[in-house]
Image 1 (cartoon, rainbow, N blue to C red):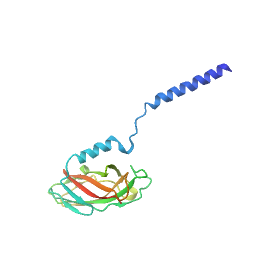
Image 2: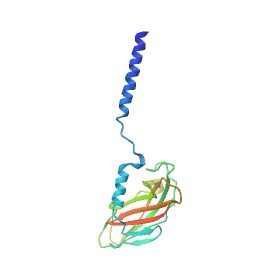
Image 3: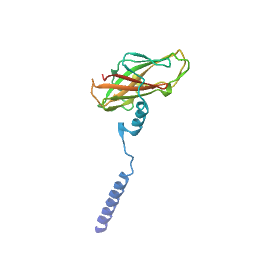
Image 4: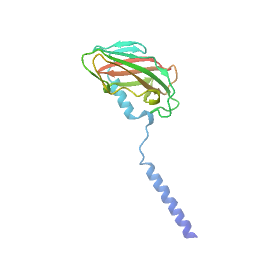
Length: 179
């Protein structure tokens, strides 16, 4: 009987020791504030915007590109939406790009970073809501494309929404409010 208790104590002690040792091996989960998001935001926000525009207004860039960001609207992300977590405020908007320039525009280089005051926001992809991010095709001269873009912020409805967008080397700031 004494030997069984000693073996049980030994097994429990070893299990506790192994469990304690393994907890230090796990990767740290940074969640929505991962360094990758911060680095991507830094790439877009490092350069001063060439122009500032409000949602719903059109902007002509010097390289012949014309941009329009529609007013953001609140949407309900589906269970398959990426990056969205309750209680974030999800918003989506349409981006229209008109390539009036002489060369093709590589849409894979489009980068958009969003924030609400001091709160960073995350991109949301939700195919069931038609939000698939920026297209990756090349936009030929004279062509137009419109796509839906989604974000989610740890903020409140009515808080400021500020985008910094990079299109073909031009950085644009877009301002409005979360809906």
